[in-house]
Image (tube, rainbow, N blue to C red; front, side, top):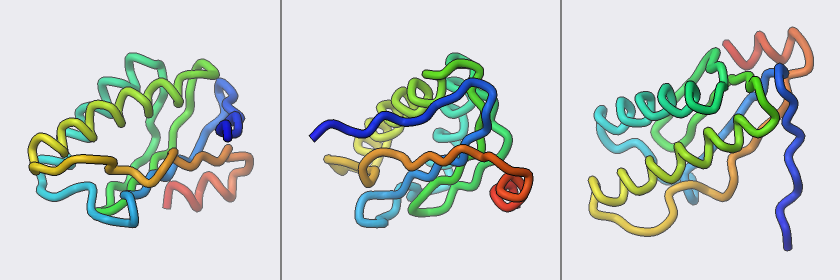
Length: 119
């Protein structure tokens, strides 16, 4: 079954959530957080996605972003995922998937939702 197309609109903020597979850990040590943030910065610039806020939990990630192109968020998350999963698997001697399916995304369509997401 094909994945449902995402609603990606340039200039509209999005709340992204990506969980570890089976809610397992995806950040093991402090260096993992630093690597993730470094690559988030690199790929957000490359694909022209503004990152307004982020929370990195041990087993999931929340991002508040605004793309300047319709494909920016998807390209950023794909590149970030490819790099980070390979990094984790090599660094921590594991194999297989790290993330629980595709990341979840919601358009931030009100001031209230924006404030709740940032908080």
